[in-house]
Image: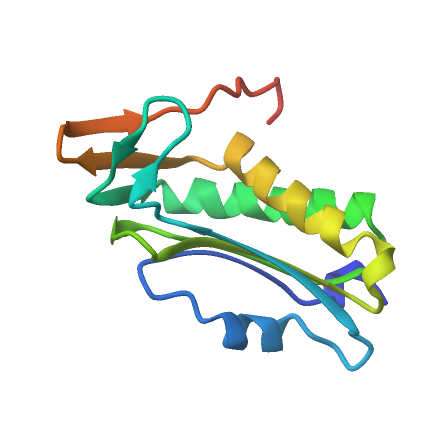
Length: 155
């Protein structure tokens, strides 16, 4: 099937992420596998400096973020020709612990066609190049969470 007619969703939203609706939109009659990654707000962080989190606030420059999400989807399609559907959704706004913040879903005819790897690539790449900012608010104060990726020319 031509990549231009394969289902691809990328969006920034303040709405709750509806896994069932998104999965239905990226599923074809030939789909037999879906790999889904959902990131969530942690109430407790044990890696690095252990601390509690009251909530996170996500912000994004939506036109640029969605263009970069499209780039991630295009990269997935270039690396894994077997991928049928792709959904990349990021929530913004004030989000509390146990709340899903991001969803990456990739579908394919079979589980052994790279669908797991494609979903993993999608979240890793989103974290690298999509302009989304996260402010963490805890009992001890608040701070912006910064990544360590430095974009390469053209990204």
